[in-house]
Each structure stands twice: as structure tokens, then as C-alpha cells.
Length: 134
Image (cartoon, rainbow, N blue to C red):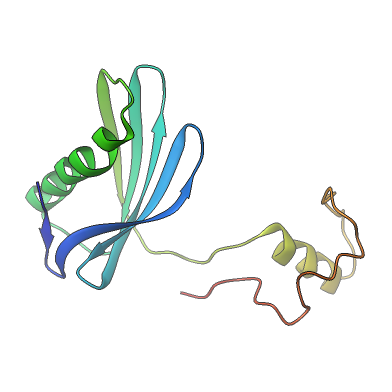
């Protein structure tokens, strides 16, 4: 099944994959319309779908069918149920440990989170972007 949003045909771009979860940006044509996180358990698949635009319930249900057919079934994990929580919102930012640590240093201290790596690591230049603006 293919869903068409007001912005165009639905497609997914994987953001991450772990042993038990996956995250995707959801696009309608070339426009990002949301994000989906999938979490696989032994018997069920749980999903959190955050939509960045208003869609009619019928379009949301079509999108859930597309997610099931395209992403969940292709994961080839047994499941008894597919549970989807749908939210409407927008991305506020993407924050990393490095960004937060730099913020703490600039604010004059605070408790530092151990990084587990050499503190003299110069692999990330000081001018690197720590937050991805939306």
C-alpha cells in the first residue's frame, strides 16, 4: 500500500536502527511530514508517530497501513499486535551530549557527564554544529 499525503507520496528515510528499534523520517514527496519510532518486542510492535502537519484521520490510518506494510513487515519479526500512538507536533531541536557539555562549560560549570573517551580528543572541531536547527 502506498499513502499519498497532501504533500505527495509517502516515503521513509531511516535515521537509526538498533537490535530492537528503528527510527525514520516520514516524507510526503520532498516535504517532511513527521517521524516514526518503531520498537520491537517478542510479541508486539509499538510505534510513536509524530506528525508535523494536520492530516485527516483517514490519511493517518492509510499512513499506518503503509508503515505496517513497508517497515514493520519488512523487519521480519513475529508480532501479535501493532500499537501506534500518534501525536501532532514539530521538532524543536536535536541535542547531543557534546552540545549539552559545551553548554554546561559556557554556563560556568555544573556536573560534567563522563564521556568514556579521552578528554583530549580533537576529532570534533570546536566550530562543529552541536544542534541541528529546524
